[in-house]
Image (cartoon, rainbow, N blue to C red):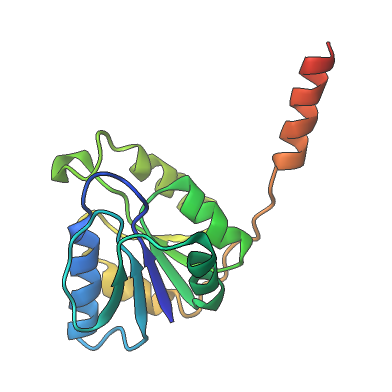
Length: 159
């Protein structure tokens, strides 16, 4: 099962859903696809689309997913990494009015360079290649730094 998550931005990300639909139509994606679409309005006979869903349902789908296809939101990426999911990521871009700037491109580039996920090109020209590559992709294990950050904050407060 594939979980596609677009986050909760107030701008649509139709481009990614069109790309996923094209891969389904071309017979590249055969899996069942669930989508947390946020404010993105999209129609598909092939995908299970939800605007927003309760966190327990989202977590359940994330736990069941073999693959997570996501926008470049750090929260979604970290959540999927903590659950040891294979991730394909695509940034929301300002030139398509999907976001106010292109910071998601930098986020995805950094996670990709460190071996945590596979990145889609802005024009999806590598989508089929990435879907084939993800089958054998072994993501680097994610190590949370939360406890160190808490310790640093506590030390600062104690001073």
